[in-house]
Amino acid sequence: MSISRPHSILVLGGARSGKSRFAEGLARASGHERLYLATGRPWDEEMAARIATHKADRASDGWTTYEEPIALRDALAKLDQPGRVILVDCLTLWVTNLMMEEGRDVDAEGAALAAKLGDLKATVILVSNEVGLGIVPENKMARAFRDHAGRLHQAIAAQAAEVYFVAAGLPLKMKG
Image (cartoon, rainbow, N blue to C red; front, side):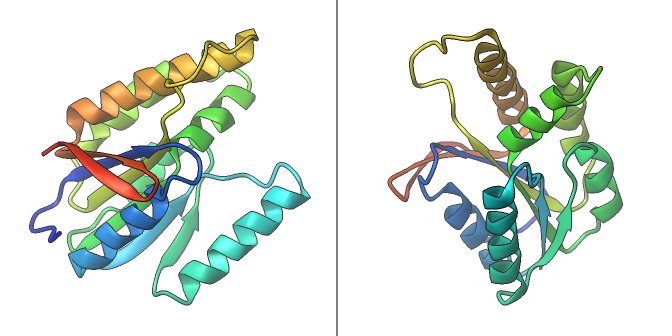
């Protein structure tokens, strides 16, 4: 796939579905300068080790990594330049971070992010976990998370030029 003009791409899939690998391939194929905007937070030692491994892997593959767990829209604005592709991984971790912060309006921040996408000069690839395909969660926080993620995905998909769903490493183009 060749990215000829700046636009946004949403890549959805389940855990370990191959969505990040697919998104990275799209970014590589663009030929643009590749930036990785990571939203993960090291909540525990295992997550800290995952983040360190991912960072090392990306550095050896020509990525420049930036980390922003909360102010995603501001980070995109700072990194935005023509000739760049910015891979945001991942939106569901961002939703988690927002939910864990006191006084955040997750839906408003998601709507603001979606609205910002049309203003960017860089191509932005957003990766997220599709969490709405399973059973209704048994607790209030998990249901709120699923609902916030679902609304965010709908808002981003409405703005995105392309949307993919990845399962078992196989992408299905849904839009674009």
